[in-house]
Image (cartoon, rainbow, N blue to C red):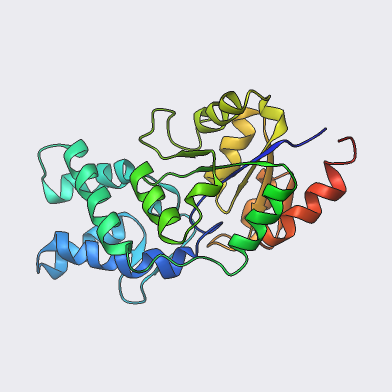
Length: 238
């Protein structure tokens, strides 16, 4: 089997999730609580976020969910008119509060350039909004390296649905089994499995190898190990 393209998750895979999002999440919770400490605790607990330590587990909706998922959990607490309106508000907050905190891994750019030189098509599939994804990728100077960038609101559905992977393969006119889905969460890997793509888990995010291994064809420390994996296992027939 030959891999012709790699579709990356963004947070925890291409950028440092904790450095980029944890402080921003705490600020958003405090802003929405509007000085109500009890409300802040309820909002944090609803999504599995620890505002004391600015951290969360791999199961938190902050890690794998969309702003729409989070809005569904917060709307009854905040008594907002609509989930959709709250979701759009959250997208705006995430854009604002992560603008200055987006942090790439040191291996991200070099690895992407190596893969590009290998002739591999590159894309991004994130459960953030597409706008947020483009702001982050553009902010660290790598947006132009990808031929496909999709968020939960791009019309292909969120992960773990297979739509983003199928759309990526369709854009490149290749089969989904010629795509490798690379991510740091169960949602990333299940999306790949649902689409029939190859899956690679990275442990550069919040989840560890024991959590990810059951869902992945391969597991590596981070994407810097991806070119060797492709060369050794998938390029022999090219």
